[in-house]
Amino acid sequence: MTSTLAETVHDVLRRYILADGFPVVCDLEASRGSWLVDARSGERYLDFFSFFASLPLGFNHPALALPENRERILAASLHKVSNSDVYTEAYASFVRTFAEVALPPAFPHLFFVEGGALAVENGLKTAFDWKVRKNMAAGRGDALGTRVLHFREAFHGRTGYTLSLTNTDPIKTAYFPKFDWPRVPNPKIRFPLDKREIARVKRAEEESVAAIDKAFRDHPNDIAAIIIEPIQGEGGDNHFRPEFFRALREIADREEALLVFDEVQTGMGLTGKLWAFEHFGVEPDVIAFGKKTQVCGIMVNRRVEEVADHVFKTPSRLNSTWGGNLADMVRCEIILGAMRDEGLVDQAARVGAYLLDRLHEVARQHEKVATNVRGRGLMCALDLPDRALSREVVRRCREERVMILPCGERSVRLRPALTVGEEEVDQLTEILDRVLGSLR
Image (cartoon, rainbow, N blue to C red; front, top):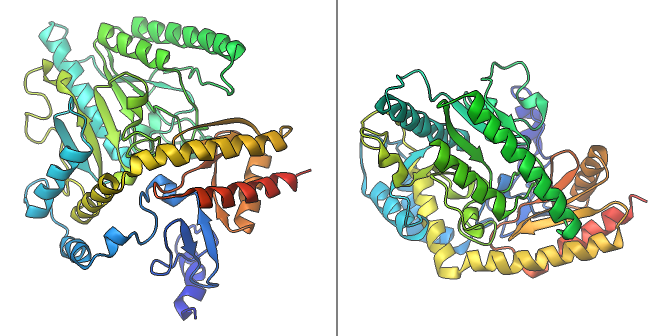
């Protein structure tokens, strides 16, 4: 039986906000695993959306149902502690678990904040501080070190600095003031990656590297960071070759810039490894994380220590009132424990391979409309002929009670929870097959 409030949720919200989200009311108690229950109708929706990839265990995972864990989350949520100045056992326990389970060995520095865009911004602040201090030590003064090199079709957020980096849908950045920072081509791959495509991508990489080199020549000593998503999410699920990341690493070292990977979406197991950079044999200097980690932030390697009084040594250079949300931290610690104990990163790799195979099967049945099937782990996507058709597929899937998202100009992206199984994959691909068939 539905409550009166459930029936009026959308009406209430529309009075005060732009309520243009999914036409469901999420039942937080009844939803389970990869299935979201609509509180109004009781209908179940297969969730390959997972709150923009931020629901790692799906709904109501047993670890979160344990009485002791619920008590921990409740205790942390009753007071909004300013973690930057007042420390608690819960905070220390979370940091210890995060370091043991999720922190790569080469990254000794951590900073926590609420929001993925703010995580990216603090990564940029780390780079600005580092580069300016480098310039000062070299006798260049403190006026240089103010630019960030970034890529086309990038999405890094909608806050102050990140607005200058994001360039997907123009409506998200139009009319807001932005910095004139160097933006270069993104040499993305189209699949299958055959000999012809490899040759094309190599040429695209050469063009991108040439544009990067020109940017450093045009702005000598002023580019503090190169930032990239290991897989560009909202921009179209765009993949890059390891060779290109190696080139970025070499350029960042040569030009004294920090290499920043935005892993807010790709991190915490989605790609079949804990962090997407582990696929490529290239280690960045800064990793921004969020979404599945619940609390957001950055991890930074020892390259920042090349300057004296860096941001992890000087108080108040990086700070915020809350320093992340304590309840989010406790939830993240529980999630990390479940991921470790249940081998969910390996499961994501295994089920992700199955998902990719099934998507290829569907694409072969609908080769006139479904192309460029791609994925790492569970982070999968395919292309439709145009933007309108990709949005239509998303709409029709929702009518079939499957939640997926569009991305880029003409792609459909899948973002299931790490706990998703082959049975749910089969259900998704059967519905996708039916929807694509209906487009004829």
